[in-house]
Length: 384
Image (cartoon, rainbow, N blue to C red; front, side):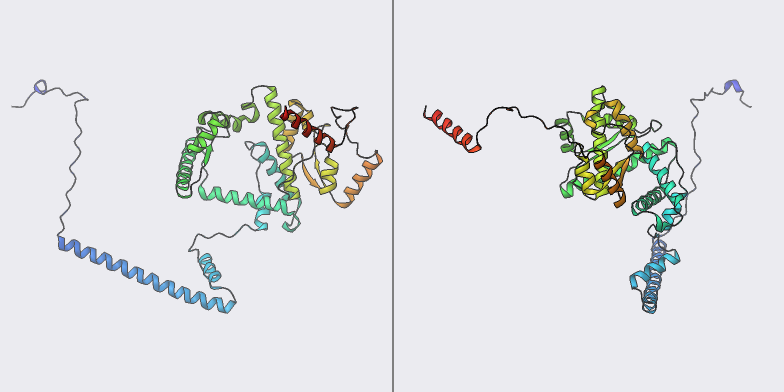
């Protein structure tokens, strides 16, 4: 007699249990069969390795023969065989011709930082003006080659466009750097500090740091900050520059003035090739122009000394330096002579008044008398 539905127990959805289907059992293999299979696999591996060794021996003999025939070294010929046959992931160095083509095809992205955006525009214009790479100055060509190398590095590592993928990439790379720095400190007794922050508000990654005990103590004792506070200030500066870290107008002026002086000094050292040269603001014509025959073009202020300017006067100068509108330039002989003639026609270089001595108008004796007098006074005081 069939059982009615009312007699069956009521099972809810939560009480239902999923029973996966039973996995098909594989046939058991005897120990002798397994040993036989292992011997066959080992025989295949040994034969494959022997064939590969014979192949590379023949390739070495061919490389030596071709090297003698064409007057090349054996190493060069081996690399050429790999490169032509596309066996190895080899890449040639960036040629000036490829760097020129890359600079011509550069696209100016609106999201680029001001300095990088200005450099990209300048390289693109220089590349379009010169049709031949031989006519491009060495400094500009070096910048173009560095741009191609940076593009190759991005292509090799992979460019991630989605925010979550970028965040994962930042964490992965930073973790590798942290492990390498830790291993370096243990093996070579070094102290390192690595801070990674975002430079765009659209990115989602938080500040990351890799610091040992010495680095943390330096930040806390010397700078007076906690490591987390230091990272937050660094991120604020990377996002909003001086507006992110300056507390008032006086702090803005001090930081902007320091930044202007640093950029000017850095450019001066690059164009002169003197890594220890300091900028002379008061005696600029005698110490810099006459000595090294360089000038700075595009200075957007009538006042040249940053110490005499406030934040409102320093801000346009900083923007001009970062965007490349104000930069150093070498003078040719005709330009230098013309500049000297103009200065002489205007009455020469006018030096500012020297600071007066505090004892002006008083009669001063010789140094020996003063020294002897001080010695006598000290001796008399000792006797007393």
